[in-house]
Length: 77
Image: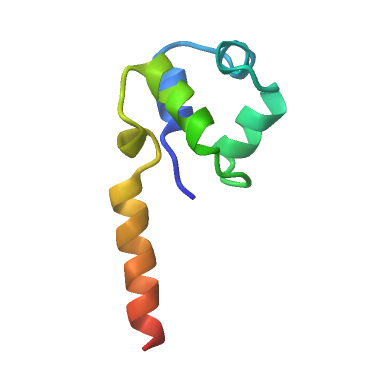
């Protein structure tokens, strides 16, 4: 799942470790989220959204991800 974590983190001039410390996960988790290898839980997404002052919907690109999934579904039919 695409997220804006890297974009928001770098705009905040924050390291992966700093973000990890603020949301109570390992830096490896942040790295995996940024590489789209791992989707954050709802609670983790909420914590990160609070850190950056955005909504979970904006942080996780929910509208864009839904449109992408809808398109994939339509292509299967």
